[in-house]
Length: 363
Image (cartoon, rainbow, N blue to C red; front, side, top):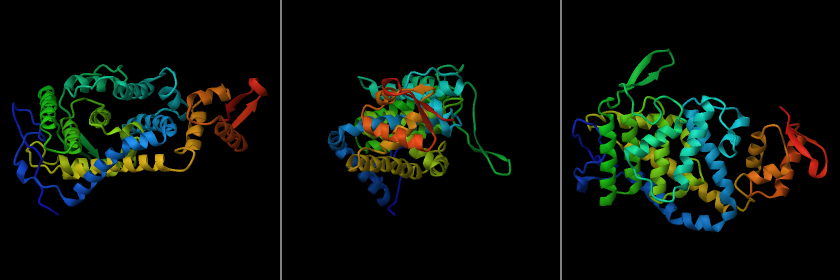
């Protein structure tokens, strides 16, 4: 493996933000494995427009599936869950939240909507990070959209019940300045254009997690900022493949790489490489799934499963037309086929005939 040096390292104004000050750039070498992952991601970004044009009929189904999975996985990582019958109505329908977990589910969806539908670039700034937090928290908790007011610690609860301090983030008093400097240094590094965007994005997210600027919701905000930074840099994969789901599926690697790369962060003696490799692995994996979905000869990316999810997420009685309205990229014939399959399995029942026919889930 080639010799590796940190991308950036700095301390100023007493705020410990360690990844974005230029230092010995000419000596920096990236290991071969990291370079391969990076090259694979860049190659995929170059092909994504072709994939998007190739099968536009599957994109709507991919987007719906991705946003539901992203909302569910990011919140579930933090221990926030809702009933299976409420998830899709909250994310894709007009259901109103009934309790605190549902507010957080709806809030995360609102944050993703802001990222994906904004008509102008969203500034990478403390104001944006605060808004992400306010949205992700459902805007209802007392400190939604506010920096932490007390110092916090990252605690590991071991199997024997022992609580161990794994990491001490930036103190509450220094947090606003640390986040401001992080955003400024990221912008300056991106403007210089001396390093691949993906490595800058990964480093930004690592620093944000190490600062840990909120009492609660730091993980969700970091995942939202990952999506925003990828989107702003032309990596559209998060629109169609849920990065949050991939993080949840590789949660052990997530925590291990974060732990390994945060050691020595305050002293600028840390090694960002484990985090870089994990971050690039997730992006590369997402692009592979995206390619497989659009290049498949099948009718769509798991459309049968998507139809089942919509039906399972529909409360009360419903007509075929209601399911069809939620899935414009899915044929009516396939929806009917899935309903008949679920009827045979005893999962739904049909009442009435013709236009007056209605379906209902059997709980």
